[in-house]
Length: 180
Image 1 (tube, rainbow, N blue to C red):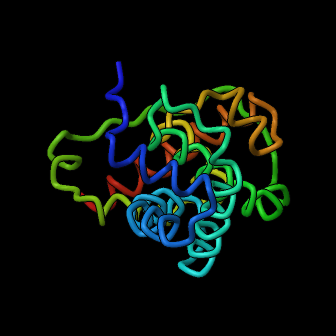
Image 2: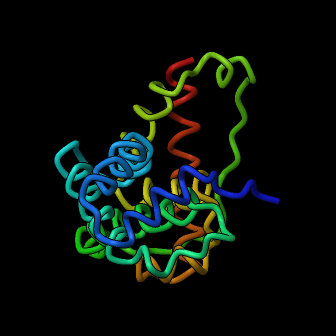
């Protein structure tokens, strides 16, 4: 079960719904870092990330009237941020080659390799993935979308999502092995 939003957060949201710019600025500043962290995983560079974050906040403020206070606010804005970042990348991703494979090779590596990684190392490894593989890996492994949802978001077949996820994992394994 999720924790209900605090009274202060509910009050902030209420003021934002009325179009109060000062409170919208407070909300923006409060969730800016969170939004950047999410958007960075789907953007090519910092400029794209900033544009996606700003677009997401415009959507958040425009759609705030649809927010259900019974649900976690952070999860609600997270979905908007992810969808906005994906929308911005969709036109680039649709030009990626779409192929299918039946099997992915499993490669193992030691737990010490993973234990020695920090967040910066992981983000650097993810940046080495092709854009479509990185997007699918992030959506599936980090943001918890299923293959059917990813297929709709990226306008690719669900079977291709599975293939790209397998390829992303394989490439990450190879990169991890190379760094070990």
